[in-house]
Image (cartoon, rainbow, N blue to C red; front, side, top):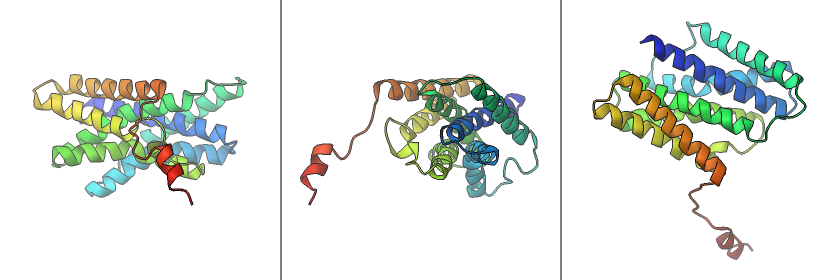
Length: 210
């Protein structure tokens, strides 16, 4: 694996750990809760992906992932302790950054192990969303992927951009960065303008209430 693969992985781990720490802060968890939430957010999706691929789980023999989690969590704690408030959408911002890294990296790992492009994109999406799902469930919230603005759709979009550019012969690094940026921009646009894919309207629900 190229060096930049590893650094992208660590950046994704750190960003998702920050996201988990912010969620723990918002729910007033203790120190143990912070580390648990930061860890499951950071490695939950990648762990499930690796189990499905039947390959060694990414963090089993690599302590650097835990160093990244601890450093990110402690740094976030120190920042929060010195600030009275943080912007409302900070958690969503870091979650979006984590998605950008993890979806593309997860897609590439699936391709490395011989999956089809479609399966690789689905596993990349799983890499991105499952850690956040576990985080939200532990916080007793409806997972972000099931509510509000476009979420999983942005992951699929990032994976499609990445694999599409690879198919066109674009250099891998450039394709990765393009896929990450495309995912991030779409997710941020969805948050800003509340883009959704409505299926059941509020009016429809009201008509069917007993």
